[in-house]
Length: 207
Image (cartoon, rainbow, N blue to C red; front, top):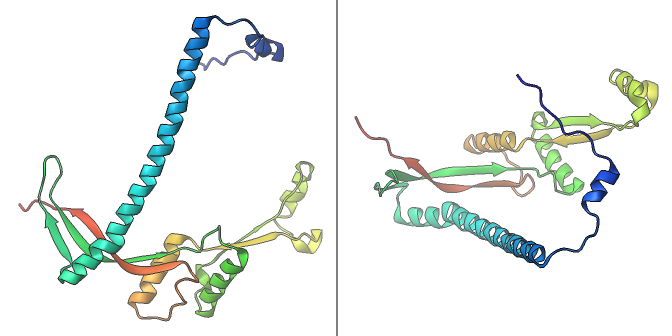
């Protein structure tokens, strides 16, 4: 494998020389303005596309979680088929249970602790992962290695304690507890949602 050639380091003087003030030509100025205008338009395009994407995602989420489940429930059906159209395959839209729970890292610490306490009260503190961290300066590496064995006893450190529950683990637990008709904490405390969702499944051709 050929060696990777790296550019030779340039001095500050070399870099500054590239930007030595000089009188630009009118063509150069026009070319710069043209590309700057293009960049400004691209900035606006990106902002518009991102806003449209977020709105489209919101509209789609409402269709899957609210509109379609409500319409299908009202009609008394749990699935409906859509025929193949052009290069789009035939699909079946099915109504399924939906579960989600997440003790968000962005929540205030008091709110997170309330959620952890709710899980402990139900005897499910095994869902909670505990992480202990502490900080060392650059010249304290040897101390950091020793503290792996002796945290507070020898060095009188006060490490930070962080608890979390993986959203997928919490969601799976919520589903198991609900379907087994076991006690649950208030859903808002654990960032939980129990509902219905309409999902597309590609239809398999029968042999």
